[in-house]
Image 1 (cartoon, one colour):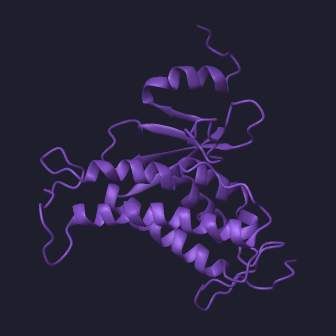
Image 2: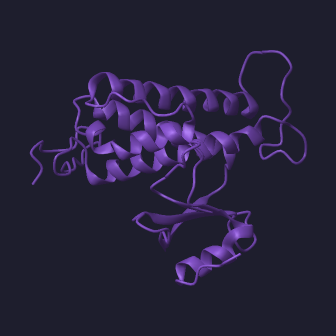
Image 3: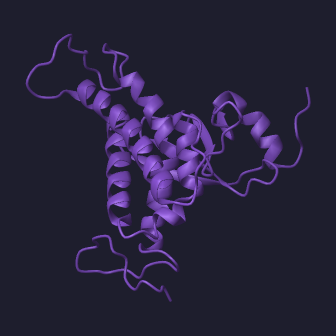
Length: 219
């Protein structure tokens, strides 16, 4: 039983019980974690929407000067700015109001990982509904801009990296002929240079398969 009663986010006429120690339900917790850990990748992917031409994911040209109304290129640029601002803003709130004094390295993967590691603290605050709503809405907007058609997410299995404990995820789009293009770990770890690791593009799936089956590839 949660000490806080029902989830404080808006679930319409179907209130949900908050998870233990949190002010939001388990569903909001999962959606928020997914939103935070995927934001750096979304920010990178949306860069491909900023250039026009037939090969562009959104198939529109970038305008050279502002005009009334927003096309998909404008919206992608706005979403990238919003992602950066969102991560920086909530990391600053964590530093100002939480028990942590050491700021993360100023890269989006590092900041996202820093917030994700402290997610339960964020979700136990009185303002956690605002944090959840902004995170989920921004992630949904960014996903819709990078790939408007239906996207299905799958769990691949446990992350094979030592002492990780994360879960491997991938997405399959309607336009993918057979296989998705990326597998990543939901723990979103980063190395000492602030680069996200535990991510495998398609050309590294052979090595990933060997890792999963306990037979590491050697050079």
